[in-house]
Length: 215
Image 1: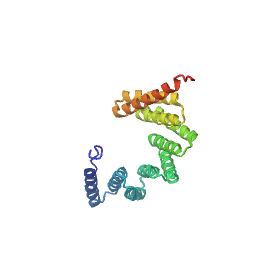
Image 2: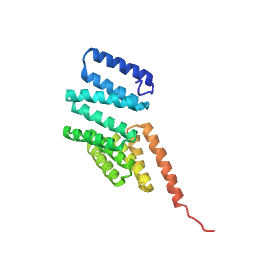
Image 3: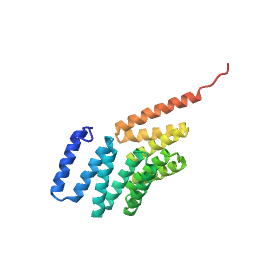
Image 4: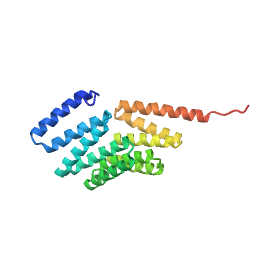
């Protein structure tokens, strides 16, 4: 609750208390989760070196325990950290390692998440065809699963890509689809963001369609 509401000092205190209790009980799985949560908190507050250290400690324990699902989550989160800090080659390597484990485990939701982030990474580095391909792969899995939240996020992200490429009409269509789904699942915050984005795109379309008169 403290983390979700932005009370990071309180969240840190609670995570550390939890970590100490788990250490006292020798709960290695719990320790790795606490370290991961503290890492996410450090990442959110811009303390990237501390986040990296905590993620690596958590990852090491998960590897020792043979917790493949946990390992894939750690690698994915470390990939996000690398991407946030501009280390794109490292981010790609970590995402791909995580993706491979998720595929081995048959974790469809995890696979789609990895594909989505690899798409975002491709978009960040200007590889737009690859980004589109990865987003569409991710979207297809979300659709097969009936994961409306995932579908909406995929559509919204693809819309940002199409806008960047100047395909404003298509971007508007995708954003509108995402907005509709966010409203259906009562994701009000994301629905509002999608609505604002759609209105911005509509404004761009309107300016494009105005006739130009020569003097």
